[in-house]
Length: 344
Ligand SMILES: [Mn+2]
Image 1 (tube, rainbow, N blue to C red):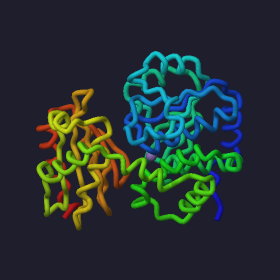
Image 2 (image 1 turned 180 degrees about the horizontal axis):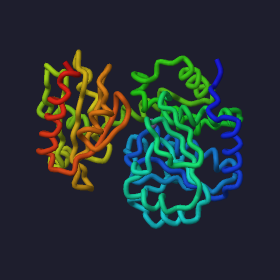
Image 3 (image 1 turned 60 degrees about the vertical axis):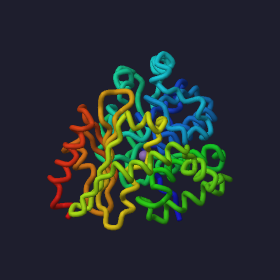
Image 4 (image 1 turned 180 degrees about the vertical axis):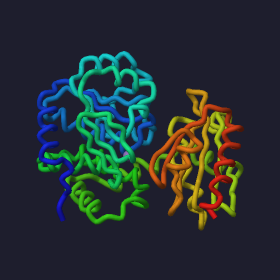
């Protein structure tokens, strides 16, 4: 089985030239960085550093605690905590990588700084409908993760032989987390060929699984139980679940960033469920964060665009509502009613 060549001959030349000429490189991921964004950022950072580049990896805000084990994580500049450091790096850099996002808006507070940065950009991503935001764009919405595309690019550039265990671990983490530990969006033999090649680099996939998924605090598990038992509304006709998490409840359960990660998937375990919607008060801004997950033929991205100022993938999307959470719940109920035909 062959590893796919993502870059055309012309793109490969463009990559070589752009990276070759660059000395100071910024590597960016989206706000609320997940395992795939962090995996891609850290893998590419280490690859470029080994090639002698000065690299500053930046994300708009911090990653969840369950990703803190990732090799190289201490180098990442979280813009919200270290604004001047991020600003400085963007002013000095001569190349910017945009990883795992399809629009500069996904950088949130960091967006204006990046828009004003004159350095050329290279984008690698797997979200639908990418904006034309980079001189070189490698976008494939059929890929399971940005880390998959990045693996193929590094392989194409001849960097597999010398790939370190640490880079392989970062890439594996991205593949694992973006597919729910290979539970969805991962039914392809070539993906498992890549996984085999990563395991051949000496990664400990079982340890990576435990690092990410067996890392709950007691409070997080109790919050999960509370949400499912006391907060979840279930609409049997529409095969849909909805729950909302308030800041007050987060305080009660000693919430730390990332604690609600993945909760939206839980109701999908109810037999026959087609859609799950989670609402969560943002702890930093006066908005409600919306996550949508579906199984089968319900388009989450369409619902996110139409009702929640967002977008995303077919079976996984998100958005936000600038209103109190009680009103956001009303909006979500309306969205469910409006899509009732498709959900029945
Ligand atoms: Mn991703």
